[in-house]
Image 1 (spheres, rainbow, N blue to C red):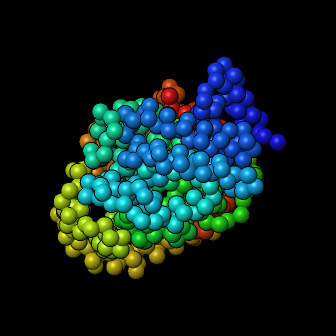
Image 2: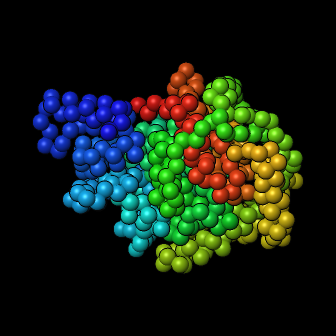
Image 3: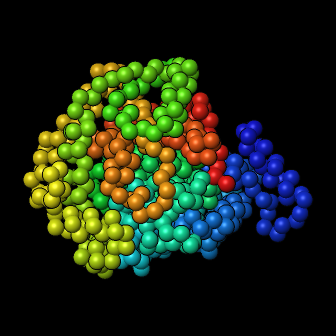
Length: 500
C-alpha cells in the first residue's frame, strides 16, 4: 500500500490537476515528497519521472537568485526522465526516475565539472564518477551540477566565480542574506529549497554536514574508503569522501545503500542506543544552538536513548596536529595528479592563478603551492616533516582515541551540535579564518579519524526561521548502524519544514 503521507501528497496533486488540464501532467507537491516517496510514486504509476523532473526544474529556475547551480541541465534531465519512463514497466529500480543534483567537483559525463573555480570552467569529463554511476544505474536522473565553495576549500559557500543571480555566492535556502555553509553549499540549498529531493556532496572536514545543518537536510559522511574517490576534484586522499545529502534520513539510507551495495536497514530502536557527550564539542555554542541541542537530548532520552558524558583527553590538540598538516600538504600532489589524470589541460599553477575567492587564493598561493604550513607564532614552515609526523604518529593516535572511546564506553556514537552557530550573514567575512575554524570545530575531528558521521536537523531556531543540526559520529565501519539511528532520531524530532 502507498504510505498515508505519500497518498495525501499524490491526492493533492490529483485534485490540483482536476482544476485544470495541464498538458504536462499534474502539479506535484514537491515540498512534501522525499526521494524515497518520489521513487515509490513513479514505480506505482502515480506520476511520471518527466512530471517530477519538470516540477523540480521549474522550482530551480524560479530560485536562481540563490546561486545553487553552476549548470542546470534542463534538456538532459528531461531526456533522462523520458527514457526512465519508457523503460519503467517491469524494471522498477531503487531510484527509478528520481531527480537528484551533484556537486560540481564530482564528474557527470557530458556536464562540465568546474569545482567552483574559473580555470576548470570548460572541463568536460568523459565519464561519470563511480558514485554517480551507481546512482544512475539505480535509476536516478541528474538535474544538474551544484555550486560550491571554490575548490571545496571553505565553509561559507561565498564564491564569486559562478553566480546565476544578483548576489555573490551561494545563499541560504531559508534566508537569502545568510551563508549556506560549505563546501557542498549548492546541493544543500537545492534540497532545503526543494529544487531537488536529494543529491551528492563531498566532505573533507565537514562539507556535507555543515551545509545540511544550516539548510535543514540530512547527510552522511561515510567511513573513509567506503566510496570510491575516483572522478572527484580532490583536497586530500586521506580525508576526502563523497557523501549523500537528502530531505530525510531514509533517503540517505537509500542513497548509501545504492552507492555501497549494502542491504536495507530499518530505523533503530533508540532503547538500545548509547550515545556519548564530549565537552570539547560543546564549546563556543550560541544561545540558539545550545537551547536546541539541550531540547534534542531531552527528546532522545525520553525516547529511550542512553546519553552519557565521556572524556576524550587531548582531543582538540591531537586533532589540530592532524587537520591542516594533512589537508594542505596532500592538496598539492593530489590536485596535480587529478589535473593530469583527467586531461583537464590545466596545470596547478594555472589553476591557482585564476582562483576567484580571496580566501582560497591566499591558501593556495601561501600554503598549497609552496608546500608550507602556518605556525602558531605567525609565519609558515615547510610542511613535509609535519605531514610525516601527522601521518605516522598523530593521526594513528587520534584514530585510537576514537576507537578506545567507543569501546570503553560501549557507545554507538558521539552526539553533538553539528555547528556551534546558526548561519552567518553572507559576505566576505563569512570566509574568514576565525569563522572557518569555528564552523569546522565539531565536524573536523571525526573527519581526521576517518569515522562516519550523520547530520540530522534537530529543529528550527530564531523564531522558527532557521534550522539547526545534530551530528552523531560512529565507530569506523558502522555506517549502516549510524543511518539506522539517524532514521530513529528523525522519527523523534520530525523533519523541519522546507524553505519558502
